[in-house]
Image 1 (cartoon, rainbow, N blue to C red):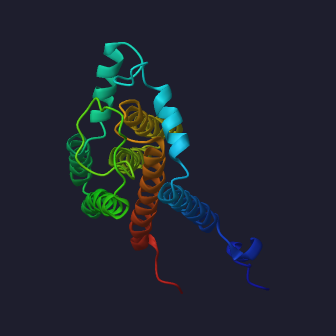
Image 2 (spheres, rainbow, N blue to C red):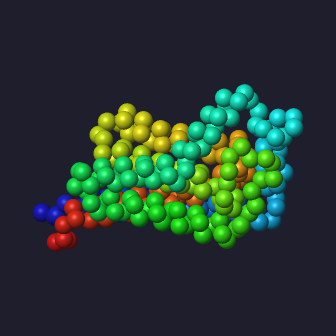
Image 3 (cartoon, rainbow, N blue to C red):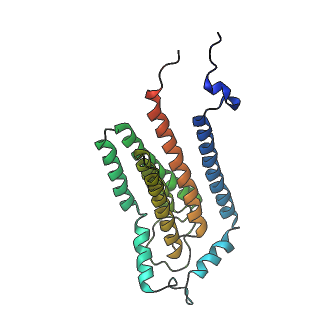
Length: 237
């Protein structure tokens, strides 16, 4: 009697569902990095200037000194943009790390801290490399670094998406998984939009920050899951 053929061999090209998922995620990360590369090249050549200025002019009043909308909206935008600050995201990171330590996942806690710190370092290197000046439109809030890519957009994507993925991974309820990830994406998008509204970043700065930040967060999370699964794999017989 012949031995049963392993299930993986029955699948096309011997590819398991896990392998397909990793391939899809890898392609997504590649697309995000490629998107950042395209934006960076266009920004270097000055081809995005009209696009950036058109959007920013639309968000300004007649005298270009203040954003459109009532004063309370400008104050709300400042509050939203502070959610993407290094200080606030540092608190979020510490809360996530503390949670992982409390549930005895020390390695994942360390990896989460390394992922966010690595993203901050990557953002700093990119800012110094491109050294794009800030918009010349009057700012509603103070800034101290170069413009491209947006650090707030990038770090928001890294931190919120990482924490959202962590909470989703810890829950078995599909509705909660969708809720956590939707909330993470919403906060990331809100911070990015506030940066353009306050005229501290060009739209392409924010788009680039979202691309590279999301790509970094996804890549770090996949690596963390891979390391987490390794002890579960027994030796081949």
